[in-house]
Length: 507
Image 1 (spheres, rainbow, N blue to C red):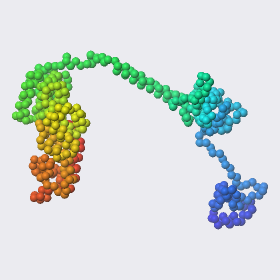
Image 2 (image 1 turned 180 degrees about the vertical axis):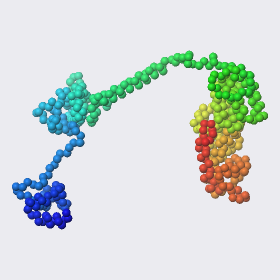
Image 3 (image 1 turned 90 degrees about the vertical axis):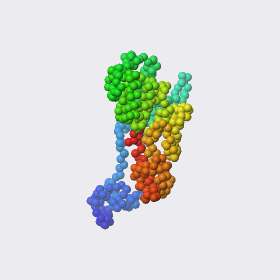
Image 4 (image 1 turned 135 degrees about the vertical axis):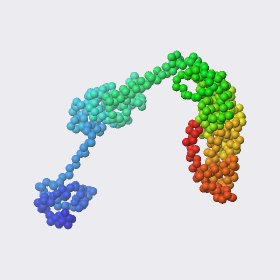
C-alpha cells in the first residue's frame, strides 16, 4: 500500500470504529512505539505525539492493542546461584517459585545436615567476609541442587567454605583460620567435588603416585646394594681367549659370524712375519686393495687373541699411514680411534704425530665439539711438539679467517699431514677466493691468485677456476680475472662443502 493511499485512508477515518476494525492488520499494529511510516508515537515523557486513528476508541470499547512485557526465560534449567537466598536459618526454595524463600513456610527439600552446614559456616565467618561467604554458599548449594546431590552429600563432614576465616581454639577464643592453598573447597568453584567421577579420578591419581613412589624406593634400595655378578652371564675372557695355530702368512679377511677357530688364527710369531711381508709388498707392488685386506685380517687376529702390545701399535700406525696415502679416510678413522685407546694404555709409538693428524681430521670434518675436547685435554708439553703446534696453527688460522697464514702453513706440513689438508684445501680456497673478489675490483692478476692460494703453477690455478665455472681472462696478454663476475661462482661452489659425514666424505 503506498503512502498516498495510507494518508487518504487515515484522513477519512475520523472516529468510525467500523473502519478502524476493517483497517487493522499486522502491519499497522506491529510495533509498540513506532508507526507504519516510522513516526514516533511517544516522546521521552511517554506523551502521545500523534493521535492516530487506530488509537481512537470509545469509552466503552476495549483498546485494540495492549503492551505486555514477558519475563526472559532461563537458558539452563534448575537453580541458579542467584535463585537461592542464603541467610542463617534459611530454608530451601520452593519448587514452584525457586527464586523466593518464605521463612514462615517449612520446606522439606533442605536436609538438616545442610542447615547445620550453613549455620556452622556463618558462625565461622567474620562480618567483613559474610558477603563473600554468601556467594560461595550459593554456588555450592546450587551445584548440589542441580546435580540432585542435596541429600547424598555428607554436609556434616564437608569442609567449610574458604570464606570462613574464624575457628575456635581450645580456650573458646576465636582466631583467624589458616587454610592452605590446596583446600578442598576453592573459591568460586561450582563443581561437585564429592561426585563419583571426581572420586574415581582422585583414586586413580593417588594410586599412580603411590606406584611411582614405590618403584622409586625400590630402585634406590637396589642401587645401594652391592653388585653381585652372575657367573652365568659374565663372559670369562681369560678362560676363552684362544691362541692361534695357523702358520699361513697371508689370509683373507672375513667377518666373524661365530666363535673364532684357533686353526684359522695366526699366533704372534707368524703375525710378525706377516707384517714384514706386507711392508715389502706395499713398497714393490703398491696394491692397496690387497694390502688393506691383509691388514684387516692381521688386526682381526690380534683382536681375537687379545694381543695389545707395542707390535699392535705398530700395525695400526702403519695401516693408518697407508690409508692416508691412498686417501681412505674411513679406514684411517678406524685406526686412529684404536690408536688413541692404545696410547692411553702407555704403549710406545708416535702419539704426537697422530695427535696432529687427529686435529687436522677434525678440521676437515668440521667437528667443533671434538676439537674443543681435544684442546681441553692437551697437556702443555704436547702443545710444544712441532707437528701438534703446526696443527694448532692451522686451526687458529681457520678460526680467525686468516687465509694467508693458512696457505703458508699448507706449504710446510710436517709428516703426512699434507694428505689430510689436501682433502679440505679446495674448500678453503673457495673461502679465500670470495674474500679476494670482495677486496679487489674490478680485476685481479692470475699470478697473484696463484701465489695467494698456494698453487704450484698458473695452469693449476686456471684449472681450479675453470672447475668453478669462472669465465677465463680475455686475451693471452692481460690474464686478469673479473672479480665481480667470479664472486657468484665462488659462493655457489661452497654448497657442496656444507655437509661432511663421520668418515670425512663430502655429500
